[in-house]
Image 1 (tube, rainbow, N blue to C red):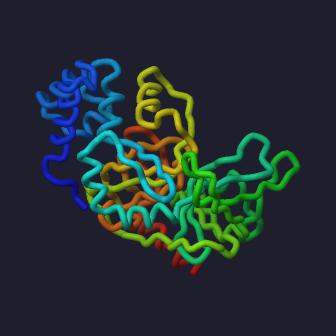
Image 2 (image 1 turned 90 degrees about the vertical axis):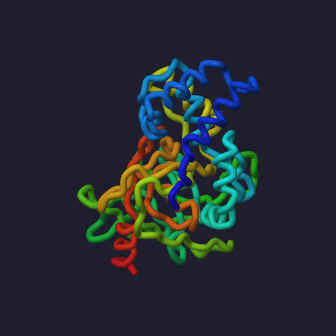
Amino acid sequence: MLLPTGFDRLIQEELLEGVRSGVLPPDVSDAVRAVQRLGAGMHAVLAGGPTLPPGTQAIYNSFTRPSMLVRNGAFEQCPSATWNSTLEQHRAVLESAIAGVGQIEIAGHLSLSIVGTGFLVGDNVVVTNRHVAVLFSQQQGDGFTWAVHSGAEVRAQIDFCREYQVAETRRFDVLDIIDVEDDTGPDLSLLRLEAMSCDVTPLRLKTSTNQNDAVAAIGYPSSVTPSSPEEEDAIERVFNNIFNVKRLAPGVVKTAGSDSVDHDCSTLNGSSGSPVVDVETGQVVAVHARPALRSNRAVPAIELERALERYA
């Protein structure tokens, strides 16, 4: 789904109206006007250019690339009415996808307990990133087994809930590590769960996407140490210092290649393994792999389809 023509302009007008109504500080207006004068698109702003007045980059990001909390399976609204209107049209398919996404947790490791995100792609089969799976797995012959950390076996579970201020859990053990791709392959791993006692539909794949398609990353961003005061401000505004709970973060595809998909949804550590879904269909176009506030790399869905075919 391509974003409608003028989408950037609509959000910029929202920001200006926020200044006029006193909701946002006056220097936000200066930032938006600077963007408009330079003719820069939203991608340029999110990538850190043009240079904006201090503090306004974070405000701009919180409007243009929000991260919305999920509660009881439903995503909440964000500061932008333009995004809310777009997403509301596709709430049913997005919330169906949300239900199949879970937080991967491990036990037996002395320093780690939450390691990333995974999502259901078949009967009791979950996908996540290779760099997540290596935290609890190791190769054994032609297959894989559990890693050992400080003398203890590390085991994994996935919780399909873990929502903000929601006590419910839907946690299932990982029984088997089907595959962990090596360093030369795509950043993917397939895991087999115990028989599931709740009704969760596997996410479907869409093996093509295009630049400027509207997408959303669904996952569990976790706290990070900011590299600068500006990044700290951006994280606080986008995530409100609420971490390790399920979120939906809309954005767009920046580039779509045969071996990677770049997108600009707001993600952090913990988002690794998140499905990047087409907003219109809820189908997975990529598996998020490299987290960042403004630029993210993901594994194309075609690579996941090939991995599933190999182990069908």
